[in-house]
Image (cartoon, rainbow, N blue to C red):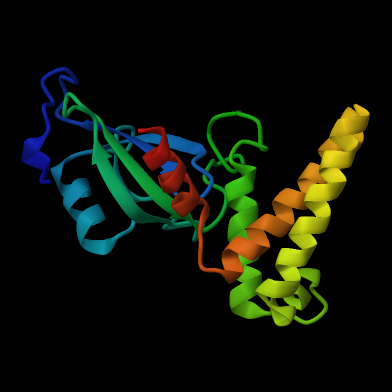
Length: 199
């Protein structure tokens, strides 16, 4: 994919609209624009660079704040006139200090965010962390905990207690994420398996 592949007749200014999405949580972070130079710099350096329409120059997101957007994947849309960039943000994306320039609920994509936190605990194994203690005990013990939480969730469902069911289901989801991490299975892997079955 090169810049000349894109159809920019609609924009009138030769700029490519770019939507940036968090590669982990899938939260939409911002909208910016690229010219050919910004696109090439983004591809070459792996950090999102835009063309600032107000300043008339290139602008690498995070060059002053340190909150860079590291590119994971890029997808053109069906008409080849917009680009989706999936990126890992190093910090808040909006100048207001918020995660996103769009005020969507912060809970959006939280399962993926939690999965990322669990993976970080697995890498770093910090002392005093409950998640670390589970990883030390291994998949057999984690699996037993998943079973216990599943039974508790079923009991609350059978009794019709919605709030307790939600509480126990949250425990189940957390422990399942820990078990998945210990087995080397990501949320994306799970989605792929489910999508394959759906087909």
